[in-house]
Length: 516
Image (tube, rainbow, N blue to C red; front, side, top):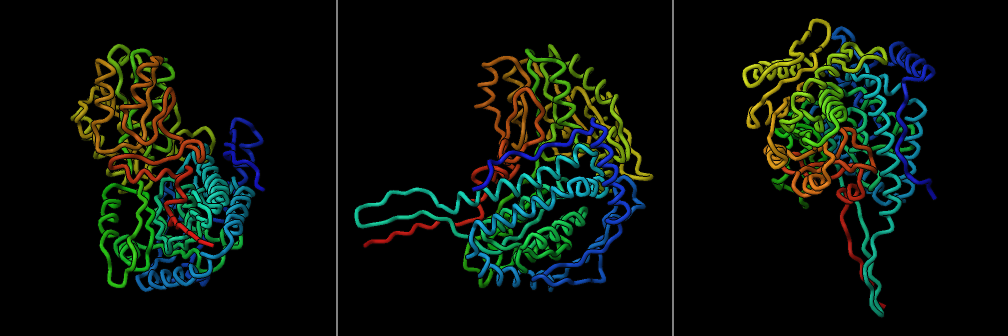
């Protein structure tokens, strides 16, 4: 009997005791965790390679967070074979024992919660609140999926007849290739790794090259929690060399990917091709980004609208697929809302996230910095720059939170995923027009509507075509078990991570009928 699930509480850094605890954790990470080297892990064995992936602090380019051995195709092949071998025993392990591994892992992370969050501050430049929420979500995925598996193990009810007993049960699928992103470098990486584990599958984990150290640390946690060798194999490497090889491999059964639309659609296409020796169709679970909208109705709370736009746009420097990078505002309140968002934005501290009062840190790397600055130049041509617009990559990759006004709904800034601290405002004359603009992208991940109009809320429920729709709040911050996450259209397969159906995507349903 397990305790009922509830999400891991967030740390209140307004309390001095909590601030001091986190500062101590940062010291520990600085003195003991940084600069270490991490090997590949294949079938429980460690492999050091000459070629390394170097993880740097995006807030301080001179600081090395850690180095990770870089896998070749030979290592990828070994990892697939190890996972396939381990699958033959792990698949038959009692589901409650598999769940117990997750419970133990969650407890292990919880005991060092601030240290893990401090590592996220260093490896991704996350401000304290964002890092704390990332670690909490990693814990949530483990706790939630463990409980889900215990229930799923019972199967689902089907009808039986006299002299016939029928069962509907779930069985594991096979080797799972996990390709997580760098933005939720702990939460999504952990969630997409433990879901196949707890369902009886085995994993080849290829972490994001920009943030591999946290993944290496998590593999250590899983081993300490009693996970048998070969169930998770850790093979960092390039997408072109290792990623494609893993996706194409005939023994790969499931590919779970979080990242760009470009890479996601490419994986989908490659996974569809049946390789020589392949005896199954591959399952792809993909989350591929968004271009998310906060709609502000004429009947709204101005302060709530401004805070919702600000939080949606600039949390973790806008580096979230759920980020509200578009504000579609009714003309009657447009100027007032825009003015207030500018005020809030310009009151916040941007810089190296070494203290609790820093709201926004750097973007992840040079390539992202360059891309975002290019979009800011595009924005200057398409709209009116009203705040921010400057960047400084001399020490770290810092870009001021940037606001553009008066954008045409079809402008590039309103259509393309920037993945940075840039929000575009567009003015509309009616709620009909607002919904039309909200739906005019190829994405359909998250959205928010700020209104007091009940009829408009009911309409948006039907007509705003996104996977996660929020009313009178920001469009970011989905919580496992409370806001199952995944989107429509080109945002992905709507797999609803942290929801009641997610684990079933990693399993095959089996009907068993016995007559007697």
